[in-house]
Image 1 (cartoon, one colour):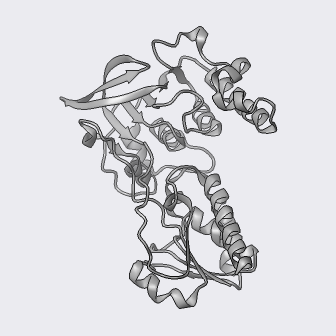
Image 2 (cartoon, one colour; image 1 turned 45 degrees about the vertical axis):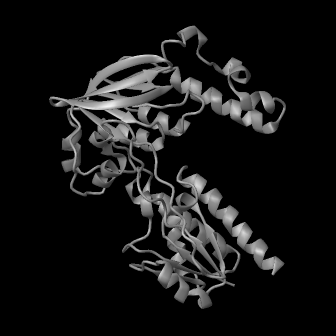
Image 3 (cartoon, rainbow, N blue to C red; image 1 turned 180 degrees about the horizontal axis):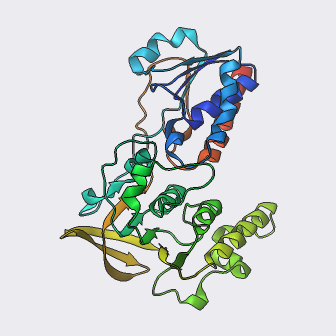
Length: 345
């Protein structure tokens, strides 16, 4: 069996690796001069990519760089392969669809500057980040200039953030529903002398905030799966999350997390931006030196390939959410479907 994988980001690479493990021939087309996709802009250690180096040594693997595959080219390749996997990522970052949304700096522009691209933004002292996934946690580490043993920001880029003292990150969801991982927040809280504060809104007093011991009271999912093994795993995750949020402290600089918060509008006022927000029904106005949009990526607009062979979508080409581990799970799911279809035929 021969499979063509289109896209050399994490999802495409994991798909290729899983197919090769099943002794299936794989040809991977990547439009850029190197593989990695969005991973190249993350703060994950480079060692995460090292397992994929073995792909190049596999006798059943062929890599085509600088090879963009459009629908026309796909049709000419149909006879060569038994199935195609589309792993081309998303259609780009989502934009805030609110008055003044055009004033936002894109999270992708921030991330690209980490790799040495000329930055097209300024941030100032006080920064608002809209969206609370792990990308936002990476941005917070960058804004505070915190470098770990696995990565180094270019010195010229760190000059852009040397004045940052105050970072606010907002989420439309509550504590349990926000997209960041516990490890993502932990990596930020490791920054020395960083003050930390969080809130759920004026209608949620401190003594009514969810805690590990009343997990089942604050989670519909937990109530429905009260006796399951999965519930025990999620409860431990919840306890770790609340443990991290319990690290409220003062510091020379400040990170603030605002849950249950919707951004209503952004207005440029002089050199700053006046942001109107609503947190748990309470209206808030606050000024920031810059606003960064980190609300995820657009779903790829799927087009009918017009071929008879099976076509599968994987990773952000299928659903533009999740991290590298989600891409790995998604790739395995798609490969299982390919193998199962082959058995049926």
